[in-house]
Length: 426
Image 1 (cartoon, rainbow, N blue to C red):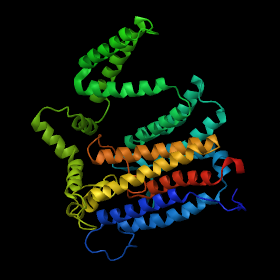
Image 2: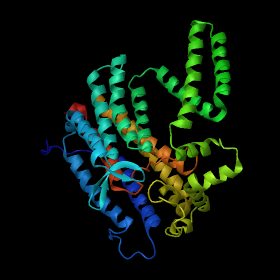
Image 3: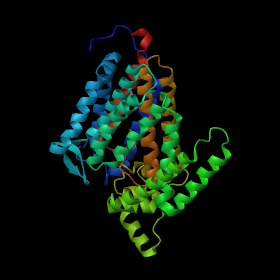
């Protein structure tokens, strides 16, 4: 299992360099966001920047460990790794520690470990293993349901632990399924449901029903060939209206008040100016401070350790979910553009290498890695800039935390290992 491979591996150094740029620049911003007063020692583990430096040191040990295994190990033991990860998630209900209202951590002395961060790479491995074993393109409903269950199980366990942000990440696998042959109709259905949900919340069920009727009537009358029975269109309309109504009920009775307020602020549902101002102070405080920090950075930023809102601790949780606001204030438009470009290049590079794989397992896993990073990157930056509702989700390789850093590192470097050892050489 751990025996030394005789030939020399050729790792993709572009991915490794992009990774180093992200963790290095991320640490500088964690240092800026977490330090108070004069920095006496960067290795002071009583400070967040000292702990993060320790996490970084252990990360490089972890990378060596990951790369020391044979590439075939990750395919052979994918199911076992997934099973262990699910047990770790289940164990949280008994031994877990509550942090900020979510039961998502194990307490180990003064440290905490978040299993959901490791469940992502385990699920990506399991999905890749199942799809590659099919030797088909998920053509049957049975196969589609089984592979959907692989991602539904961890998503449900994490949701039950009150960690909605991490649950959303599992939508990333939809991109993987689409690449592997999932019919286009599923994509259309998914986009339609998202639009219906937003319309139902923003304009109400009646307006949504009218819009849906107009669209379906237009499709029916202008689609001369294969238009189908009118009964089918009526059924689709009823389903659309029922779904919109269900989303409205869930919004009003199925989620917590602070979650309602976040959605309300995002869609601008509240009309009462007094209540709106109260909601902003309670639920949008982080966002408002984050936006002000980013905008104050201008083109080139205020300089490293010179951000007044960052050093003044105006933005809560700035070293974790809101770390991008530190980049905006201290490094400006140039710094934020640099971070965005690095992530874009990394994701494109992973997709390019995934397409070059001769093993379906490696290709599917590569798409899983790219999709997970894309969802995290898009949601985190969109959240910090107020483009999407606030959810607790870190910026990969950038936000403070050992579990997140190690989870993303394992996710990425398993693919680096798979890419270094192509199927034709196994």
